[in-house]
Image 1 (cartoon, rainbow, N blue to C red):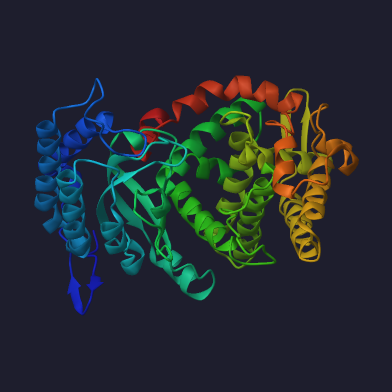
Image 2: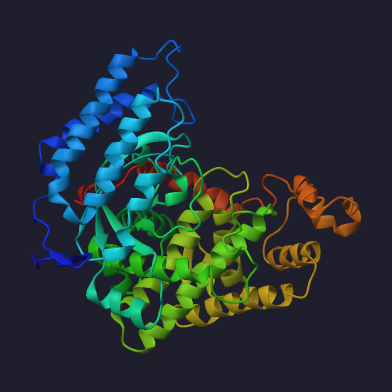
Length: 465
């Protein structure tokens, strides 16, 4: 293993090679956190008047165990020393304050993983937080992770896809909030007294993304009788190769939210919009990653083709049939991609087999990306409501709206005296239902999709064996 040199201030540090999760203090920390989690309310506080609540002394003891374990493990991770010191203070303040709503702003500000990205670098992270697509409550969680930052990716970020806040990461171990479908570590999920002026990092677990991609793709390919090119079949069977594809995809996707013809809030965090607008934004970012991957392949980059088929297969096979149907904007984007390719004769479903025109797939997928970009460009000169209807028209060219939709009947069916955000109430929970193809596919894949909850690279390899 190559030594990892990390610059912290003016000092170069070579972190020990020992795995944090193999240290005796890690299971102690993990057990203490798991004891605390069930005591917490939705907002992260502990209500000692509740029937299942511990005695205050018992909660104090559990937090002391977390603190002691963090202090024992911290020397393994000198690059995180300032964060761990702030974390200990936040934990003690939470306990001393009677376990009210936690405030870990100081430790959040001290945690700066994007400031020293190095491939294989470990981090021990403990925060009260919800896990996106996982646990919606702000429970205490602990996770040990590794940075994914190979030289080729660092060079692309430096020269082509500038994204100084992005962190590709993999799991080493985690508490129950991550034994879920969550594949991200985002600072905005952490319990703090006030949001920082700006966030300085965001992490995506490419090992979980790759593992569930492989499981669902293999099941879909088998179910649909799809014949894969040799190189793509080899990629789907290779966990490490898929992780490399996903970390590149994620890096380009993430930066795309802030590039191009955009609204002022590119992530749409502060906007109440119909869910197809979120679906188009996420799809635009994925298709931009696809478009860049086509360019990379033409330049001889071996990861370019892998990214293309990671995008196509995850979007077409997993996204539309994952999760419930209530405002499922990622599912909508997957349905739209499949329908667009189907109507342009790139994919065909005949004789109970799926056929893909591998030669035309890149060109036609880029064509859909261009249509969405044209929508955004024209939207700059439109009122919000007009833009929403234009986006609805684009989607409904390829996906049939629900027969009961008021939006499908056009502006005359809505009360236009209301502000646009109120008209969002007229959007059906499932405005664009699944096609017959996806209804059938959903039934065939539901077991394998459910099995990917909490999956890791090790789990994927065991399943493949």
